[in-house]
Image 1 (cartoon, rainbow, N blue to C red):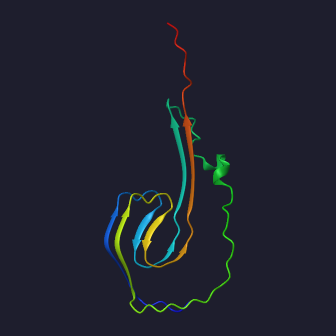
Image 2: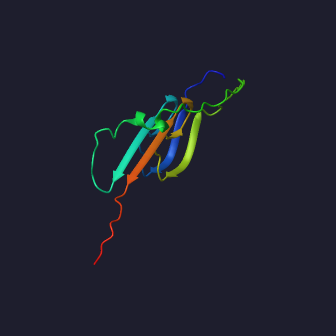
Image 3: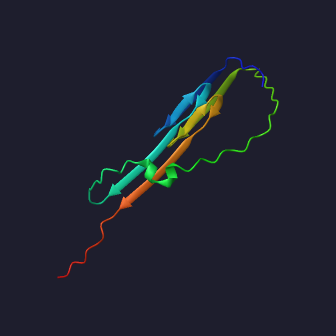
Length: 130
């Protein structure tokens, strides 16, 4: 790839309602973005705590190796930006969440990870006799 020249990212209008966990919004060139969000959410109908709820190692989901993309062959690419600008009219986004990015510009490298475990414990219904 040829050497990059300076360029400008221009966005006329952007409305983003929510940017969540380990996520970001970028306008402009960025070399690297490596978000990560390991989440364990325990919801109980009746509060009780054993003291070990936050140990991610107890759940295999958080220790399984992530699949890696297959290597792709190197390709020669030559880009000539006659107008060194990225022009965007309107962007409307409801949400950017959990190891994600909304980016207008060049991103050289990204590696995102998001592992979520939700546990909901409901109280068993007791039978009430009249």
